[in-house]
Length: 208
Image 1 (tube, helix red, strand yellow):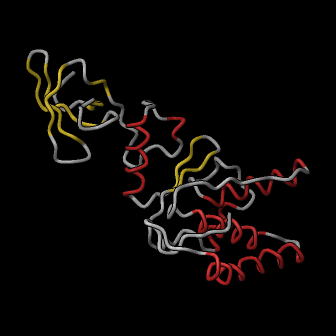
Image 2: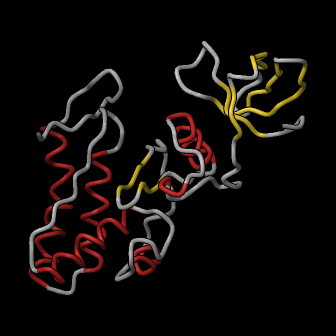
Image 3: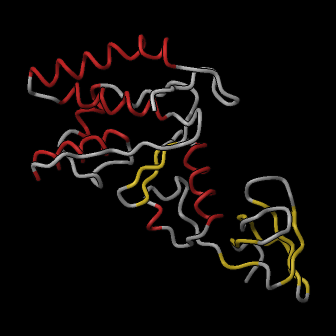
């Protein structure tokens, strides 16, 4: 390995390998500069492995990660989040990170972009998940279920509303469309009665 090579390094300060770049090598030790902080580590030659570069935007589907372990998954999600790419796939599963700010990625143009498309046809997005469930329901003539899970404040309620927003925008049936819009319009009233404050979220949904 040459100086400047990309590596995963294992150090006691972290419970998982962290990304770094080799600065210097001397005997059986190397000095590694962390890629996620200003820290520099000196480790033995058995505490690191080669790291492959997933590109400037990370890997949109983590099944395709060349390095697959906890450190690479967390680093990939962080890379994408820092570029406001809050959605990442793991196959047909969507990982979403709450940006805690509005993003202009849910407008009518985006709805049309995902409407009727395969889940792999566009960048990861919750509209793709909603479209996939809706398409399978009609194709297979069977009920579909979207499981939205996460800790308090992670964005489960907002994700649910976005799924309903997509269905309302793409539904051609007048009766179904009316019901979906009624659910969306009733959400603020339900939240005013059913939400509660938690350690991480001042407005946490309580509809379980």
